[in-house]
Length: 151
Length: 383
Image (tube, rainbow over all chains, first blue to last red; front, side, top):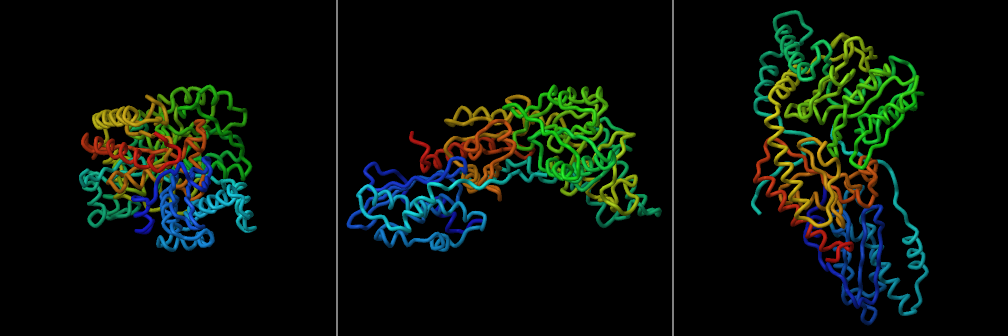
């Protein structure tokens, strides 16, 4: 079901932890959906110097969280904002279609952390980022039904 | 940790027992006749079919003529619900919210066809209160269908109490006993059951075989049209090898093995509740299947714990939303009053006859280790 790279990042996630003196914090997800990500960034000269995360979620959510921190570390804020979900999923060797939903958490978390950094420092926030910020805040879980398929 | 493989998903399916496989073998290439044929080849198959029917019926305290073979639990449930509904033409059905989808989906279809269905709630352990059944019975109620034991949380219902009510009120009573057959006592006379669904692959028999008990005199409409097999109620050449395997599986199942599994299951529950912080047992503490355990771990997600245990060779199941295609948590856990966020961290471990004490101890330490690992990366865990 999952690629080798997804399993590798899931079993050995990079950059796990919290950052009490973070310059920007992103908190995304919804306990009702079952996935939550907290992401912390340390910014120096508009570059992501350090990054940490903690995620409650499925293997796809944990692996993409780990991957996004790996890809974002060392990038400028603008470069980090250019990181797309597609790029993250592709760099993990793909995800099952049903799991794409779970992978959005990571890239949303990074955007929220950058938004938080810019807002805290009273810096102008690009329109696109502000729109995404509003959308992430408003997002709710999709619903359906679920059963064990035992019979 | 060693290279042990521990299968703890016996509620999903079981391996075919060696004795069962041996009982099936002659009916593939040797005694391969069609049970409907009049010649010696056919008669051999017919004998196997009827011997099997007798053995399985006996386990239910039913007459062999009251047992009809199907392709499994799903077909048995569909035949029971739709077969009764179609025969009656209209009316009201009572079932409950924690039934398997093989009950709920046919019920939803029957609602579209004009039948009314009451879905009874359950308490926090997943128990149906028989007095709720009594209150729900109406003049036009045609059928009550309450599963014997739940596939996720293992809670066992009081069939005898419900059967008393349905008998008094003159309503037919069906139970889906796919999880409980050979684990919990089923006695169609004592429990006043009119229809019972059972299957083979949960009891170390082959997949693709099941049966429906239909009390003598109860009329149902066939759902498969074709030949005159199974008293014209289920067309299709009988799966003789599978049925012979099913009968052998029913025959070898017994109290001794159930008691052994129960001891292991008790050990598993005790050690996990004692050894892991913030964990809850889902389902009833006592009135549950001997092989079922189901936990909710706070601060982690079910698919993650399942996959990490799988990497250690331990196979379990979860009702977490992320393990489903719809991203919704289990309807069973929700019906017991759990919040969606509590349902995501669920893990079901269902034991079976190949599990040893060493397997269970290995699984316990694997759970402890991986719950701790996942909590280390969880934002909801700060200890």
